[in-house]
Image (cartoon, rainbow, N blue to C red; front, side):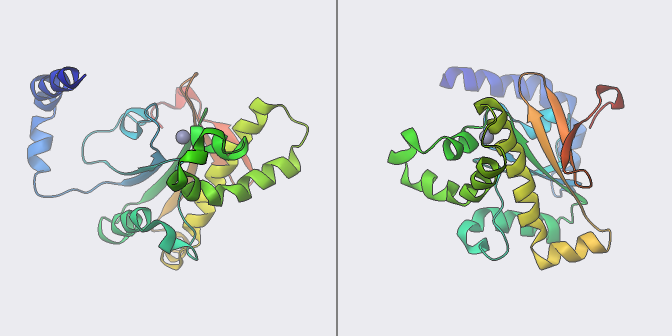
Length: 214
Ligand SMILES: [Zn+2]
């Protein structure tokens, strides 16, 4: 497999880098990304591919189940919080996307019991805060089928993480003064479609393909 990775490097240098050579040279000493994209570490969810972006456009944070701690519990995930702080205060991104996805293993582990994760103490501890999302799903959707519950868990998790992000005073201030926008997205792997959270109607709306690049 390492040989395959090196073939990828060679392809990058001769094709992809070549295509963006000027851009890479311009970016040598600076970056000015417009967006902070927080996504799951899942290998099927690649922010740059999803939004068809060029190098330098997107600052990314990826972790299991695309989580953000609340302001009160920020000390629990200093890696994520410090990356957010840098993106907002130094890079001054204009928008933040928190993107969940279908068939999320992290969400499924919380929803269906820890199962094979009982031997993964770090993962279990990390995902513990998602129990509150699970409780909401179980309470409101006790009679729904497993697939529906899984989707609701993944989508409600996005809303929960957006709310966590909004709980930071500095971010709240930027939202109020129009310096920042935050959106929750949900990527359906099988169809390749992305839905965006509509706060007014408390629902995810599919982004119409005709609207072009989202
Ligand atoms: Zn995931």
